[in-house]
Image (cartoon, rainbow, N blue to C red; front, side, top):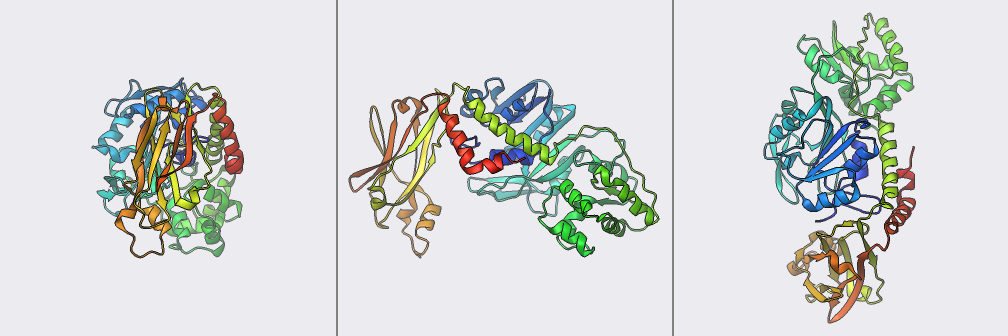
Amino acid sequence: MTQYQSFPGVKGASESLAKLRSLRLPSLQGKRFLDVGCNEGFFCGYARFDGASEVVGIDKSKVAVGRAQARFPDCQFFAQSWEQLPAGQFDVILLASALHYAEDQAALVHRLMNALTDDGTLVLEVGLAASARSEWVSVKRSIDERLFPSRGKLAEILENYAWKIIGYSVQQAGDPLTRYTVHVRRQKPFVFLLLEPPGSGKTTLCRTLFAVAKVPVVSGDLTYRQLSDGRIAASDALVAAISSDFSPQYDRVAEKVLAQGLANDLVEVWCGRGGEGAFAIDSYVPEKYQEQIEDAFRARGYVPVTLNWDMQRSMSAPNEAEKKANSYVETLVDWATETQASILRVTKIRSPALARILSGWHLDHPVNGQVVTDDEQFTVAGWGLAHDMGATDLQCYVRTATGTDVFKLDRRWQDAVKARFKDQVDVPEKLLHCGFRFARNKSELVPKIKFGFVANGEEIPVARFGLAETPGDQPSLSRRLLSKVGASVWRRR
């Protein structure tokens, strides 16, 4: 199994910390949390860190569940599919980057919603296909072809729920579609609020009340987006404030606009979109600016009526979510000193012969710091290129305490070849097959595995695989990594 989630000192295919920030999970203090498709348990670990009373993760991969349990022994992990959810109801359920794998995506969403408590939140990370219609769109990815919903189809699936697209999620290499974070809750009768922060239910209130009553609704989120695109006429100051470093975190946009004294300019735009007569505004306004907004409407002949209700928000504030995510990663480093899990150490070997024989090589797996459980194999994968375009005898090898195995470089790796021979018009087909991939056992890591290449009968060692000597060995590496490449980001407040 390849490394998907990332931890301090362990680089996976997914940018787990950035994804955690974009999910903007609600407070988990004292709540039951379920991660559907939990992989190695990164988000389950965060739920434990944030004070959840019970944390459960499910995944079809026994290897992933084994790794998760090794990292977070006080969480519960089950190797099972989403066709059978754990018993009981949950306050927060997470389904990240997995909806497109379901045979019946709508049925899965409804099943998860039925597993929520009355005040629970389903957090979806989902790719949306570009289509003006409500439909499923078949999308070809690098590894397969899957169906993705358009925004209209997502709205159709969620029409009986309270839901909101929070913003963009993390775009990963090879993603054919933009990913979004969506928070979904059960619909409930509302006591009206239209100027409170995102996640309070005001957009759903507009859908369920004002649309039925045929009262026009002006969406603040849509207005900000169209102003940033130049599709709405407004004052130069308002357009400049919104367009500068625009992002779909609309609570931050509102704070920036109103802090610059542009309440009148904003209300002028809202009135132009509302038409003549009554209309509703669905837009967050910080409490300290709400009186300015009311006065601006009064000056234009309106009677402002602010609707209020007390309801738990479905998401953390942006700054709070970022602080918790940063603090969680630092805590993961501390927790690593206490774990008894086996940690794999990858050490590169300097070789004078390397540059003479190879024009380039890369080891994708294993990665330094990954957890290795007793009953799993780990993957060795990557690519190597000889200097000579006509070379055909390049191989790789592993040497263990019991012997040496040699492997062909027979996997197609076009990106590596194109990067190396970018000026070459016709690259031989045989050269495109420069990759390798095979599995080894944990037992071979003692004392160590030596990995390298064989070219023209000459062995070139390039790396050693072994186990960290003590539980505290890997966290010290993680701390050095944090200090070297990410301290300003991980610890930003």
